[in-house]
Image (tube, rainbow, N blue to C red; front, top):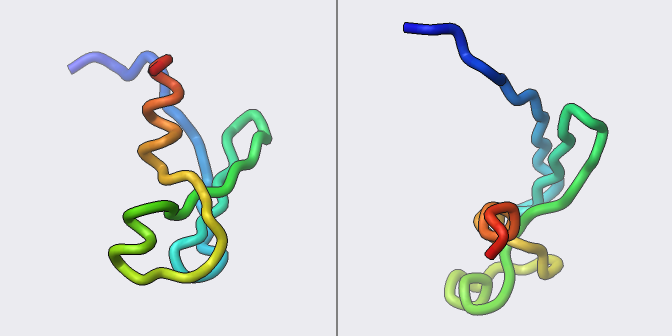
Length: 62
């Protein structure tokens, strides 16, 4: 097997409940959590924050 071309380095911290904060290798930070129907369905409290999958959809340009 060949050596990896790129390895990502990121840190993720639990803030409270499902609220998470991530820091990328570049120093950029962002918060993740839940919002909308998912938050309502599971009766979760806290601020409305983008889901991790929301960031994945955005990064693919869609």
